[in-house]
Length: 265
Length: 340
Ligand SMILES: Nc1ncnc2c1ncn2[C@@H]1O[C@H](COP(=O)(O)OP(=O)(O)OP(=O)(O)O)[C@@H](O)[C@H]1O
Ligand SMILES: [Mg+2]
Image (cartoon, rainbow over all chains, first blue to last red):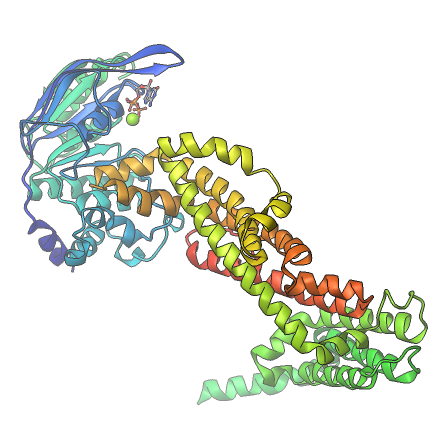
């Protein structure tokens, strides 16, 4: 049943896109004063890469993701998707926000259908919504309203709402932060296998160095605000990865050191 | 087979052991229903026992009707088990039936029988019944006129208010021009326009429709606007990253998100438009329940006034019930909405 749904979901092949972040700086106005948030950030992401972004809280990770999504424009620098300047949001770059932000007036199914409906293709593509719901294991909650879901279930619906669009770049802002550790591990495995099958480019913001190392083939560590790229670490390890892998443990120590936690770890 | 005989034995065993408590249980369950029946018998007796102090033609029929209600209450209570949901409904309302029967009895005695309350101003129940039977055509005409006027004005006001509210909330340019006008004109009670409206509009009917629309439109506009303005940007961000165009953002994000506010506005608009309706009918339209009230006052026909008031309150309450049930249907996704 689920396997069939998965097969259905893969038939819409959307390979990943390249993402170029070139010397991007950004700042906010906070009570008249300028608050610099990103400072000369350059990252070049290959098509199909899985990049994890790590950094102290409030350093500017979510801000960078909003720029990639095209929701805001940077104060300086350029962003490109497959050589095309990013100026506006586009469904080829879908964001799963830190908050699930489901529409409370829509049922779970209608929430997941949002993207297809907005693009005017829902009529012919209804099966994709069902497949995405199967994927996150919430088919039996299709008619529930968001206030009837747990926090973790809401986060899974938000993930399904993104995946149903077959994005070329999937932008994830701590999407697993609210899940319990068991569901979290399951969802991590789901995410990796999905990414491997579909080949989309993934940007994942996380607070958890271990999660970054289990999932990504590249980990970028940011400095305190204003965020600068402090380290760009390749994780050359085949999937599925094991949490106890000494190579990963070594990298983890290194990353925590970069985040200023070396004394305790 | 063995389970059958076991349960059989249990079933036949229970009543025997609990016969005395059974009566107490029955009284607790059905006591109020019996009491309701007694209250209505009292009302019926109060109608028929003494002579009326005045000349009313429906006293006898009212007494009979009271006995019929008493009988229905009694049989409904005794036979509740066989009546299903109707029996349950009666059971739930029995305390109110008691109160109503008692109130009517006191009213009957205090007016028609002993004349404790000054008579032309406080007519007895049978006088009001008499209005409903003898003056029905005129009353129905009035109801029809009121409903027509109210419905037209309210629908126009609600539609215009909703559209204005959405445009102000959505477009900065519209807000720039409409907002000051709204602030200047909106808080003015719609009734203040009455004198002007009645000579600027071609007919008193169109003037009244305009005033009702105005009274409805202001709260609907303001609340729709505040509803649209308070929609979280996060919803727009989500929709935009999923490929939503501006029309989608208005129709499928802003409006549904603002709907709870819109219904508060519709509710407030309904209240203030009722007030305008009655005043407009009294002063200008010469039709409808407001006019009926005024006409009755002119002839010192107090029973007619009470009769019209009761009808009016049923209509207003019915309109609000209708609005709330529409809201409940549209806003099922909200938890904990107020039950009207
Ligand atoms: N719209 C805004 N206006 C003003 N300041 C903002 C705005 N959005 C974010 N900021 C500021 O920018 C900084 C970076 O915010 P951002 O949300 O990108 O942090 P983050 O790295 O995602 O943090 P976290 O890991 O806690 O989610 C914060 O100091 C925040 O106060
Ligand atoms: Mg963040």
